[in-house]
Image 1: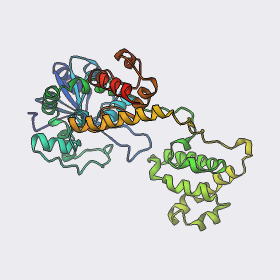
Image 2 (image 1 turned 60 degrees about the horizontal axis):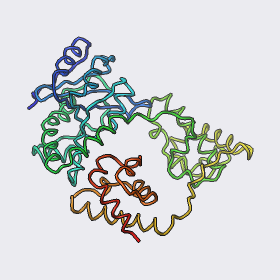
Image 3 (image 1 turned 180 degrees about the vertical axis):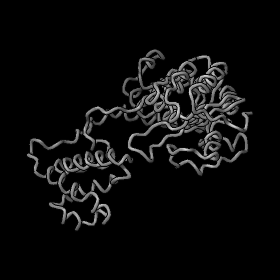
Image 4 (image 1 turned 60 degrees about the vertical axis):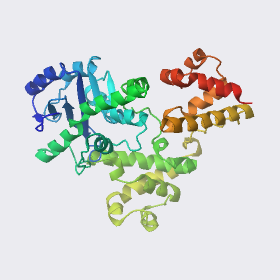
Length: 380
């Protein structure tokens, strides 16, 4: 079991020493804390690393160069254990260009094992009868100095992960699902943070598609204004003005600041802080010529599939649901809707036909491919 006292690392010398020890370990548990709830540009504020004997708490705000850890993360001989790895993998690459090889996600493993609850608290309670205290979960991890109890809290998230990995790996092997988990973990290790692609900001706002073109122009101006304010204030955009509020303004399109105040959409404080700027960008959007108005991308208007394809999809769904009950798993873990649609349309005759489909994984083909082919063939 990991020592109770984590080593808090705030300088390069200690980090190099820790990296040397970690590189000799067969398994390293990993977690991180970030500040996305408190700042405009989120960053990793703490990195927790643990073997089965020792726990390191690395402070990236004190020692910014974490390149000495890259060899350990890239070493395929060392398993890196996360719980819910997607966000962590994206953040490690974004902030430190750290790539992860040989990843094992204990949250994903729990889902493959059919656990009803897969949060870290629930899984640790199930395996070790320990109760995690999550009282610091929403704290600002960028503030310094960190209290000892926050450091201890951070260490708790990795303290049991190596032991948990061994137990989950054994359970998966017993159920012949280890390959299922490992292939999916390999895909997670390659995810990367989203980058700006020049698309309109309104495409990220749920409900924007119901606005007309003039409303979209207003919403786009409001979103850009919010970004500018958030950047200057170093706060997350949602803490400046919420999406629903901006959608309401885009629908109403008040002609001036007085009418904006009369809508009651803004609080008095928000009106005094941002009312003038909001009224200005709304007016600019209202004055745009018709040819300059944005358009929401047309939704895919695919024709209804032939009846036989619909029946094959339904047959595959029925197979999935019945198989999920047998395996005591979430049905979505067995096959995705996109994969069912492709299989129903292309009617594969062999496993090699299935391997040509990007929507299905190798483990799915090995475990269920023959069953899918039979279901499609027998559907009339």
